[in-house]
Amino acid sequence: MLTLFQTLTFHFNSLQSSTRSFSKIFLILKWHYPLIAQLIKREVLGRYRGSFLGLLWSFVNPILMLAVYTFVFSIVFEVRLDQAHTLYDDKFAFALLLFAGLIIFNLFSECVSRAPGLILANVNYVKKIIFPLEILPWVTLGSALFHAGINFLVLLVFLISTDHPIHITLVFLPIIILPFLLFIMGLSWLLASIGVFVRDIGQFIGLVLTVLLFMSAIFYPASALPESVRDYLFLNPLTFIIEQVRSVTLYGQLPDWNGLAVYYALALLTAWGGLMWFEKTRKGFADVL
Image (tube, rainbow, N blue to C red):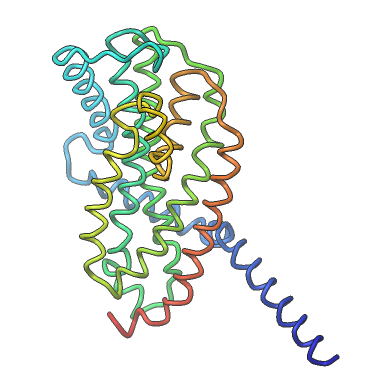
């Protein structure tokens, strides 16, 4: 009887511990919001400090890139999408599809590529003072999200200026982006920890990101592929989000709710697993650094 009671107590305590770890994903923001906001502001402004245009570069860059995509693919190469794959049968269709996909990829790429070096770039936080290291991926995500927001704003202005409709389904965009952010955070915590012990991980991640760039339906809609290949493309965690963002932003279609439910579950598990790994390994950071 005592053994049974001890077993139940152990499982109950384990469940409580797991629940606390799950909630900590969001509680970190609540506990350290002023510090996170301050560090995000410093990082965004620091990127353009000393430049002539300053923060205006965050608007100039996406405007120039969208103009280049439109010129190269729509005018030089005269790329046209099959009507079955797009609701826009004009010269801007491919540029819009490409730019929307790259916004999502660049958000992912900036966070994941920087994650392995986050702790290495902030050694003083590990050795000299008590600092909540788990907020560093949130800071990177906040900075990347700021630039992604600017890019989306440029995309919307471009849609309006080229007489394309702004669909009411755009209101579902935050619901689509949220699980993607959780997925990014899980990977960032995991890679930030691994990067302390395995310095080569940064180089490896660069290669993985290059592969994901061309296997994420960025340069083409997933519907353009044969059905025998299309399912494998969705094994890439970027593909589903890119397609859903295009659906609500460019096509005026409702999200795939069933697919989103699965993505939410996987994203939460990834975030929880990444944070758990980070918490378990952070005690060894100071010894290695």
